[in-house]
Amino acid sequence: MRQAVMYAPGDVRVEQRDKPTLQHPTDAIIKVSAACVCGSDLWPYRGIQKVDEPTPMGHEYVGIVEEVGTEVTTIRPGQFVVGSFMASDNTCEICLDGYQSRCIHVEPVGAGGAQAEYLRVPLADGTLVATPSLPDEDLIPSLLAASDVLGTGWFGAVAAEVGPGKTVVVVGDGAVGLLAVLAAKQLGAERIIAMSRHADRQKLALEYGATDIVTERGDEGVAKIKEMTGGYGAHSVIEAVGTQESMMQAIRCTRPGGHVGYVGVAHEVELPGLELFFAEVHLLGGPAPVRRFLPELIDLILRREIDPGKVFDLELSLDDAAQGYTAMDERRAVKALLRP
Ligand SMILES: [Zn+2]
Image (cartoon, rainbow, N blue to C red; front, side, top):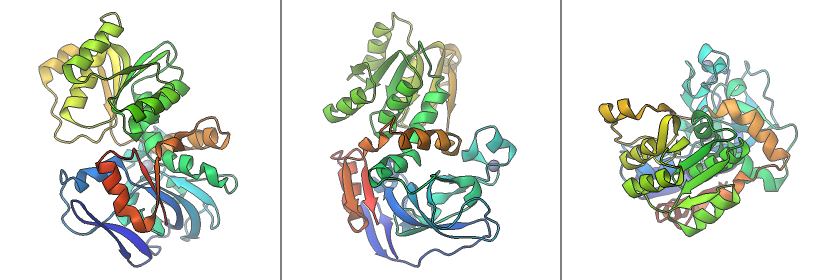
């Protein structure tokens, strides 16, 4: 089969590799309908994260089940499925508490690389959610978004305790930040302030429900948020970048007693203890337990109440995966969808 493999920073190739096979009786093999390039794939692409050996890429996927192991009971061949980027049993105590991304049996689905024609999904019964029937073709980008970026933005909003009457700030205007705006709107936020400096992304943020745009960042951005909130800061702040600057911006935009949901993968972020002590804010973040939200998100998409697929502003054949990385790296695209 064809698969995208990263050899080194800036070097992604699509090559012939062995099709995955069932390794455990709880596995499923799916034929990938669509995959995509994640903002987190850009960390190794930019050389910020090491690439030690040729690495199969991609952890976001939707597809048709081709084969299941002998212990898989709920997922069947022929079903269209959406799954999280983290495989989980969905039965342990952590899963039952809604933190499937930290299941005691967790496995990264992306280890096999979803930017490929086929993918092995571990713990298929716990990880995958099947749609009631084959979805309309035009819904595939939105269902694909549910497998990571939408689920992650949604978790950011839930972790930040977004709700009716709340003022929400979203730090980061990548696909996750934009979908955090969508989530905040769905969860009933009164005011949603998107921090963005890119005109095309501001436009989508407004379409998704942002009420205000702030272009300042760092200390100036924090001052602007304070000014807009009567000096208080926001109730709920979603951090969707993962840098020292974005994390501090998020914490400083939050009022005492408020909540920060941080979902940007942290890279060399160190929090100053004394400032954190006196900030007196709630912090919850981590790899999003997408599985918790999948049934609800899939339902909203199938009923066409949300359109998260709009974050894909570039669609390519899997063979052209390298172009997707380049376009996202150069910020010519928010997110690239790949069709095997
Ligand atoms: Zn579990």
